[in-house]
Length: 150
Length: 263
Image (cartoon, one colour):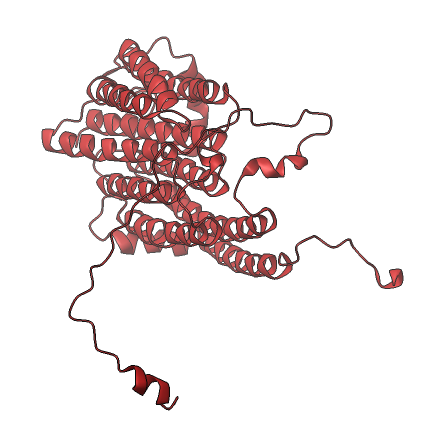
């Protein structure tokens, strides 16, 4: 490919990477579920990885891909420790809400209080049930009473 | 290469004399894309009703259309252009859906789809090993681990804290913040041209070499041997730390530190 196309690819990859990073950052700030917050952090890492792969192709240099490999390694470590921590925190409070841990905030800052708890908007899910197949076996009541329990 | 890159950054930021630029990021279309994108994100994020969500989907698709048609630079072979459009659209839509759905299980599944799109983008850039590693390590291991934790900690669908955010102003402020971030980067990109980022040479394509794994492994275990040892040590430390957290976090209340002479 010629240089103009390479530059176009680089621009596109940097833009897509920036969009992934921004979307992950938005989710990290907005969401309150601890698990979702950590998934958003992983999404930000993915945006950076895309940019690095784009640079690596453009400059024909393996350094970007090496860095992405180490990003994946660090992300795996981070996920292991974060999930262990989340499990412990969830066991102490009973749910995954980050607002339950606002005792850790800066001294003197006002507590965060929810003013509006939205009700469940969607009706509870109705799961399909399996219809029984075949015929019901006949049970001899007398035999059940005298049956040896082996 | 990194030294020259660092030297070029100030020239890039103040690049008014970018003559010979093959193309620029279209500022008007980018503005429209970011504006509609911010609106769509505010409508789509949790604590909005079904009607808001539907209109947010429509506006989000409009934003994606602006982005794909006008903002992203055209790639010369049309087939590659079409593949890139599809993969980029899947990646971005899945990422937005991951942060918009109130159920954490669906968040993990949408994130896995976004990872598949990212892996496809990496394949398109010749990073084959990293694409496979992304699918195997991220979508195969990390997301499944997240799903296990969701199953252990929150077995029912969604909870009250999944349907609300931090107050009313968090959504618009952070969406505008993200849009400002993207637009700053895009305007920096707009000043890019071939003279500011000189490629090494046209002929030598080492990254696109057919023997990908041999070159990759040679680079990894040659130039980055110490780094790979450090990464292995880091994995071991993380394993020990996770087990330690699981063992010591079992007490309901963290016990105060007691020395041997406090008895």
